[in-house]
Image (cartoon, rainbow over all chains, first blue to last red; front, side):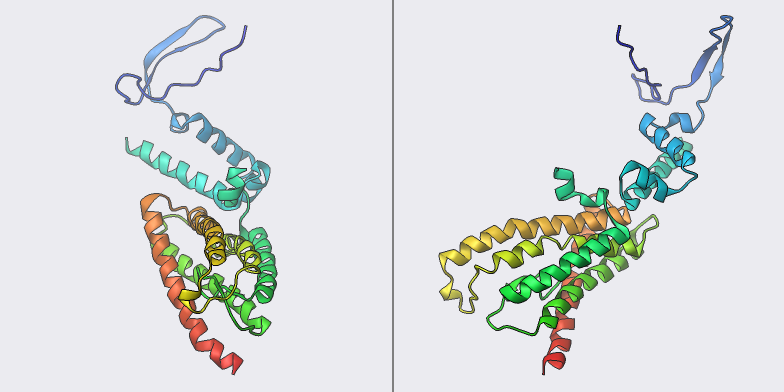
Length: 94
Length: 184
């Protein structure tokens, strides 16, 4: 059977408000923790943006190295980072 | 393929683009010399009736490019919200002028027309062939500006058009005042 790749939903499909974590479960012992927890800031980025941040950290914060690895120009990679910074600032304001 | 034709600066910028752009500008100036094509302005292309010294064709290319770089850098310094590098503006704008090589080549077949009444169907056909190439260059120049300084949308288009007009006036004035001194 083909495995479905699940993505973390970030906003409510009904009203588009940011979603919160209300339940966490341990698969080993079936313990469930309930409450209302905020998603970490980075987890609220889109999957592509989060992957970019991970790649950025892995390349020691070198945009030049990232540009080489991705086969993109330096300003393209820097613009992507600037856009993610803008997204983070927008999330922080919510 | 489309991305490489219309948005090449997604993949190439900075010193690599500058070197490639300068090489293409150099080749274009040699071809322009033999086809008597003058790129005498930031966005100009004319066929001249008389042959000028080669250095004029080379200077025209560098003045036109330099004017665009200065105008776009000044515009970016005023309007860009994020950091940018001069080398990206200079490099991408140099490479964006590559389509002019095609215009210089096409102009081998273009007769110099001084009198508007003497325009032949051949001139019109060649001008129509050059038009999309010219538009392609403008698209590349806009993309060069947009990618280099991270400006997008209507605001970026308006800023680019103003920078283009400033560069055109500046380059024309510079050539008008300096070339007579060099050729006399």
